[in-house]
Length: 434
Image (tube, rainbow, N blue to C red; front, side):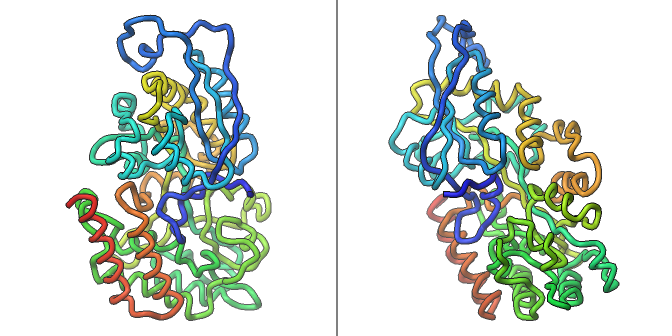
């Protein structure tokens, strides 16, 4: 199975808001011959005795970017407090993690985005004591992805986002300004559609998987609200926003049936479209192909009562509650994802193109200091929203995705379809909270 990059959790098409990859196989390494410090002390605890050096198993999904696997093995090998065996997981990673947490003491440490069911079933360990000293340094939306009922269960590793890339020369040729509202986006897509070029590409599903969240946020709404205890799109403005996606699908300005889907930049690079919604991870490929003939925007606001937005998500380092070495696992997570800021910066910016999860590291990232990359970093700081979140369930997501698909692709009534999705989401919240 082809490896996928860390972008996968950002798509809502046919899946929960966290994406997945992964299945089994891995490798090892440790640094022999170095006396371990007390792992309890590394975790900020008071040691009672000198424990023998333990072996921890750490799982990653199979990142598609070159160099990531070697880097994480090197980080593990550098840790003096335990032998850390890195397991690299191509295939259906999300399903494998679910199975492991139900039945196994390994992995001790793994990357994921927390799910409320894991917390309710006591399958993961809260990490508030680790994150507390630097909690305010994490991007709020990214930390929220790892927080359930006020407790943090994952230390965010790096942030991914999506933005609207556009060819500056193509917009200039038809006298179109970069769109600031959804209606301006629709108008621009129409004017840019000519001579075999489509105005906008947001996925071969017509934008259902990528634009559901941005459309909600454009109207000032969200998936959930009131501390995640109420449905956030039980509002006429949600139906109005989803109706705009129907307009884009019906007026012929969307690219459909592209050789590669939205996560690949080839549609924009090859001149199949003038604007493409895709990920920050593609910025180097786009720059190499187009030089300075491109710029980026957040998804535009619906109207004066809405706001521009970009989605964010991040895998976090988590600890299996069934691990035989919980304290040692926490000590390793603290060492790697709290203390080793140089490695954190490298992980985010050297392999592919991503934004560090911590605000202080964004400011240190040379790759984010100028041009479109700097614009994206600013969008993440000013306009970021969490995709779904731990309380946004698979059933709720499927209902909303199905509703938006019927609206966009079949011309179904936006009000009725949105209300049907609201009903499912309300039932899920009742299941979770009573």
